[in-house]
Length: 413
Image 1: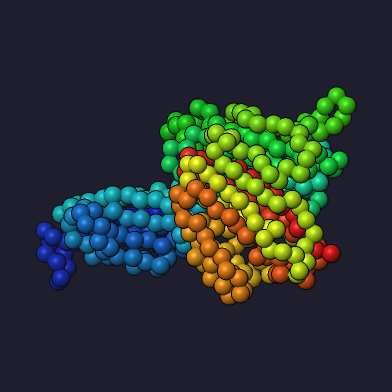
Image 2 (image 1 turned 120 degrees about the horizontal axis):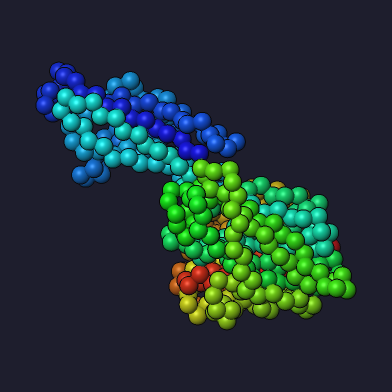
């Protein structure tokens, strides 16, 4: 399903332009009846027209329904763009549509041009079987396409299915990396790494391609794997993909990269996916109980990447409603510091400002650094008066697309 912005051009004479040099443009917004339940209203789409020769903006409108009936245009080459209001970000909670069309205004000729706005991001959904939610006490699932940001899913009370998230895929991505870290109800730590590959299918988003692209909607179903004795020894993922223009699902290939049942604390070396398992080092402290008097250095988390660090995502969850409310307030006051959805540490000066305002000193790495220590101990004094269990999930990505996850739990009594 796509939405369409229609541009209709008609030449005319007026007092300001010569007949041979000018025309008028009539612009309207339309949409095609959707083939799925996703309905797109294009009335609020901003529209802009540019010169094709120098990219100079000729006209722009905040909303498509505010475009006048006629727009004066000189003869020449142009292009028009329309998109969902706002910017296309790496991770979003809603789909983002965008399109462009090139056109030419000719003397005494009516020109009709259509900008087709399609989904510029893909959809990622996860589902948990009843057996899965009953088998695990907690889990963290990370989905990464090798870019700077990753989608992170953590344990949800009662195993409720989380809302879909939308990812702007990097260019020429053939594989998605899905890393899992979880603790079974019996206390065993399970870590797995899987690679999802897009199959060639009879119907594609634009044309047959092996690369993930906008409009691809991926659904992953997580189930536990049990031994003959009934112990949970791992997980399995069944993945399907649905293209924007079809309601039919296509099965995706899921490659099992790493699988083990670690009964230790699992914090020194966590699962790696999407490349060399030794490419990234992540050493988290052991889970601990903290107070205002706990030595902050005990929270130091060492990160090393021989290929250079590209991204360090930090996501926080808490059993304390006050803590979750405070994190939401931080996200509203400091752009790019949303620990609930996942905050990027690399080159994030807003995070430096946040900790400065809290009386804490924080330095952040730049892209390409090979070592960094993230001071989780900076949070100790902030957490000391919020009783509950506070979890930190770190996802490290290097410049070759390798990823590694880590989970640390801090308890405040």
